[in-house]
Length: 216
Image (cartoon, rainbow, N blue to C red):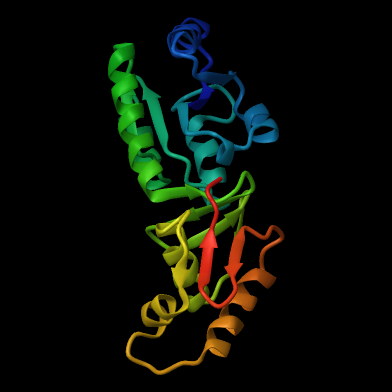
């Protein structure tokens, strides 16, 4: 698991880093929000831990910048008791959870595991480059969303739901067009539209049978 940490208190930062690195997790620590924005890509992390009130660019401003880019890596805020107004802002800009200082490191671990588990069930890493949001049927190339038509989204969702297995042409047509009568050419056209938007080919064509997305 990879954690992105914004924390200006060196003692708290060291506590978090030492604990999670003990379990072979990676913690990338920044004490400056502007530097984090310049250097870190949160789409490459499983979780963000953000101090809600750091000097200069604070955690809320950092999160807002990422959410404006449609980056939805889960975020847990680290806050003091006096930060209630800041906390309200944090939730408005996409905060997922928070812990109050001083906090038990094992409580933080439980909250992280809960969020990461939910994300794992929702997001699928198609390749090292592409990831797919199964809930909202959205494909991302790094931070950029790949614009897909409705049928293309449904097709990708079906193939990923059955990853590693061949999905027959008949099953795909039933799933995409329900009771409508469509020919194989219609399916091939939809598949071509999808592939034309991808810069990696991860969809196998089993001629005369169906299609399959390989395991990563």
